[in-house]
Image 1 (cartoon, one colour):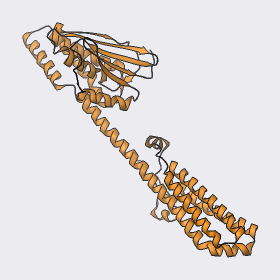
Image 2: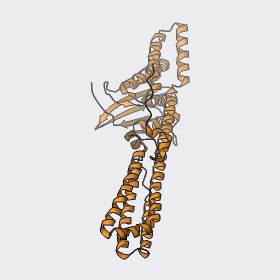
Image 3: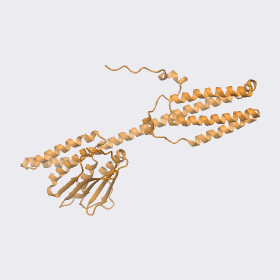
Image 4: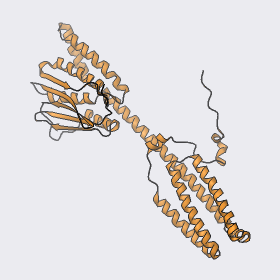
Amino acid sequence: MSSPPPPRRWTDAPWSQWIYPGPTRVFTPAELARAGMQPWPAALERYALFNAAVMLGMGFAVTPGRQALWIFCAGLLLTVLGLAVARWLWRNPTRRRLNGASYATCLLLWLVLLGGRRLFGQDAMRGTVREVAPELAWVMVAVMSAWWALTVYRVQQIAARLNELAEQDAALRLQTRLATAQIQPHFLFNTLASLQHWVDTGDARAAPLLRDFTAYLRATLPMFERELQPLDDEMEMVRRYLAIMQARLGPRLRFGIDVPAGLHAQLPPGVVLTLVENAIAHGIEPQLHGGQVQVDLRRENERLTLRVRDDGSGLRPGGTDGVGLSNTRRRLQHALPDATLTLSDAAPGCVATLTWTPALRHD
């Protein structure tokens, strides 16, 4: 049985905009932090101060001396307070803040007029108010309309930024899934072809290959649902992959893995696997005599450094990242902004070095 919908508040009714105007969307602190604080339009603030000073200065021509000075100072103070409220609304634009500021301004204006009445006398203030009432009303309408427009604009700006970030995240998740989906079809087909041939010929290598291949597929399937995965799971995929490739290449491939178990560090799925795949595809397989792939991990200060090294022909002059490495860099930048990935010649071969600062805990 579904739960009843929450009761509607009076502020949700369309007519409430007449007495309680403003945008209905409220952002959480997390959403505001995610959207970031766009810079306050300082040029608009200078424009408002300049125009307020000019308009208040013009009042000296129609207002007696003492009252003119008082009105000029009070008007300038109210302008500064109005801009301070605008900055306050810019930081967190809500309907409640907008209406609180508007009603508080009306109350403050009434108190100012009451104070002027006591200071200059009722008759003097009555005449002054009668003269400036139309202008004062227009100023109040203009200020509150500016606050309303600023609040609506700011809400739309934050919402647009959040939508943009959400679309970027969705695109990145799609790229991540596409990248992790690149389990290299030729690798799968070649492995299945080798397995079928060994089964048909009764080769004893078929059973170990099938076990490693099954374990590899079991380890790679969760990659499609994760943005980060434990380093131990990543290394399990790498071990199975290297065992499969060693079964296929025979003595042409030698490998070693020196990665301590029990490090509760995380990486985007398939990062180390991509580096190992590249080492074999570009360093080992092109050589008739094959070569060696070494994976090791060390902790240096607060950072982890993982290296994948092969003793192949090294980097090609002027070479650029392929699809796999480009995807890996983008995923690292999104998930671990402080991570770095570099490729360098190892004489002989190539070494890929990945460093990052994880939250570490040893079992």
